[in-house]
Amino acid sequence: MSPSYQAETRISLDDVHYAPLAPGERELKILGDVRGKRVLELACGAAQNAIAVSKRGARAAALDISALQLSQARRLIAEEGVQVDLLRGDMEHLGMFRDECFDVLMSSFGWEFVPDLAACFLECQRVLRPGGLLVVCTVHPLAAFEWGEDDGALLVTDYFNPPVEVWGEEGGRGEGRAMTFFHTLEEMFALLTSSGFAVDRIVEPYPCAPEQIGEGAAPGPPYSGAYWESQYERFRRVPFAIVYVGHKA
Image 1: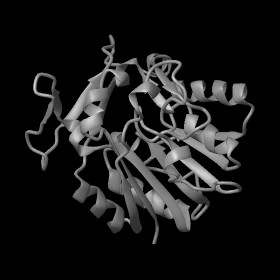
Image 2: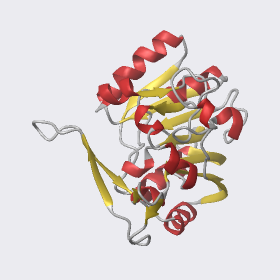
Image 3: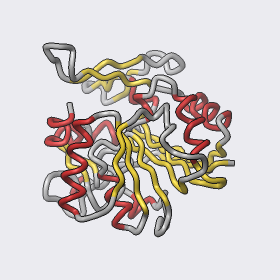
Image 4: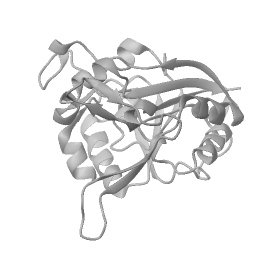
């Protein structure tokens, strides 16, 4: 799905994104000063966030399981003239990195695709230095449920047993399909703390003002596109994303 995703989604190379149509790092200040820090972006896609933190002085690395996404990343890195180390791999298995080698681990919309999130968090704990920052930006559990256009309300059927969503493009060989695993807030908190992290705060990003939405709007959100703009009314009432900000305890 990489070519169509990258073509249809507007993603900033100068500001870290945390939610569709919402403000990024410039306003939310989740990462803080990253100058001189070793930062790893997991499930990086085309590494837009890694490029953005590299411009802010970080020593950035980026990992993704998709060769197509990484080819897009190589093109953008060359165009922007920055240094980002790219690796192909699985978030659950970070054996290519030694213990305690990163100051910051982050991912924007990668965690929800991991079948064994507990294994992933344990690996994150291993490669983070003591006190290192973990930023888990993922889909909100309420995003699992349908929005009722007629009522302007969310149709929550069973919050405690969210569905596994299968979505994406149809392909002749089953290509272009993906699964999203939703987790309740309680479950995510338990997974993080049992993996050796302290949760410092939780952010539910609110969308930018209407006049900032749309191609050409300035200053626009760092993550947008026609599909997301069609969801603006929903995002104004129900959060799509949630960010768990924690550190290695």
